[in-house]
Image (cartoon, rainbow, N blue to C red; front, side):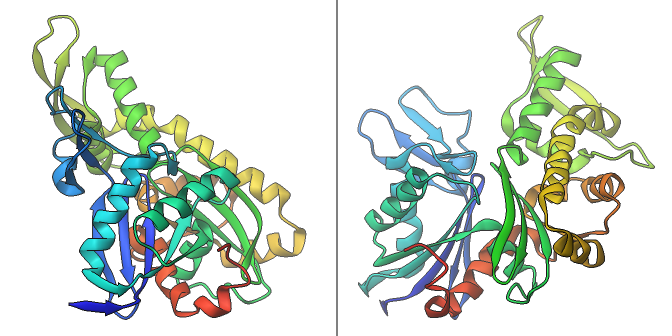
Length: 334
């Protein structure tokens, strides 16, 4: 099927790539993992299939995540991944698609150029960039064009973006490289230190999703995990409790809370008053850790709301921004 110049929005996340096509909605949601044959440079698998290979590949095959901390760490592999996803979504096209991609709020010009170049090489006719917190705010259903302050905390896989938005732009923003991946790393470190057992990234993520918390739970949950015992070198199964997860995750969670605090300190008083009335909106998959909203609410004294469909917020916002590409032209970098 031939498509005449589609408009595509891409949430190019460290953990997941979500693609939105104008008129169709979200059409693709895949992990941002690529498996490459080291000897030939050939891409063997992309997305979910490649994620299953993480930590399980022979020497000549490498399963990698080409984005780290919200930015491109492996340009060639990112380009191949984008090409694969764009081809999957658009099929054969006569006119190349116009593509809008989300970027963290504090990226450098070099990092922006890397995203634009990778998308252009992957087949885009024109590339637009939109800051993640602004896309997240649009996706959460906030009217960002009004002259009143809204605070968005978008916690993804690689970065946490915090922004105070008014009149369609961010007034104060901050981007820190502490998000879902750092939570996973904290779990791996904690279990190694406390139980003398090494677990993989995927096991750590399962723990985070199932029993992870950053605020004391009324009922302690538990989960069995398998890892390699450092003393014997043999596989071993242990039971982990959510109270231990709290110990492991509280440090990175508090760094996010402190960063929100810093942004609030720099916010002009009129906008700060608006935020105090309207509350703080949390988006992104990382905000789903149990109790993060309660922790933030307790430390700031401001009501905290988790947006509906948090994981897709940024992609949905990008999709809505696509509808107004011409109006946004003045505000986004080409």
